Length: 245
Image (cartoon, rainbow, N blue to C red; front, top):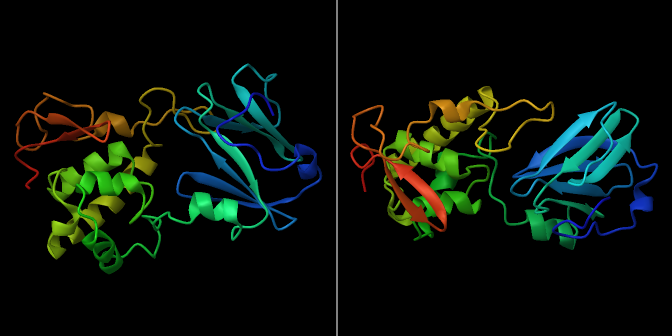
């Protein structure tokens, strides 16, 4: 490992030598590597991190902080701002794993993300619906870009209280979240600054957004100028005509 990241590894790196990676999965923004010992590694990219994987990688640079050398290749964590992390947990039920994963909502493209539970999760949340989506509590994976886009397609103003949404509007938002994320995956995600996949390829969803990043530009649907406000230190984009309070 290179310079310290946001959190300590949580074990002596030598303890990982000889471990078998049984599988790789994802929970929210965490990549989970299940180990033969019954433990697991939780990898988070932070705000500017990225991973590379390959049989032959160039020598590590100043912003390369972790190399996991395996029989199939090397997994490298690159993070200029060091907000990323690699954390060992003895099990998914352990305190450290639950601290990071325990409060995460359901996966938006999984079978557990149903309208009834989503509606129930919003009932007690009086905050603005955009902020509730970003919290990752009722559902994970709906970041700033995708929250703005999903709210546009659902016709919901971003400042509306989550608890005040009528059942039909919750159902439209549920569908919009699934549709937006599915399309984004089909376009390789969104590259605004430095995002790329493990093969170094950029995403292209940002080229077709309806509202995100389009302040003062005409709405693609009605022609009204797209508005921008700040919510929780994040920029929110919406159409004042198409999205109703």
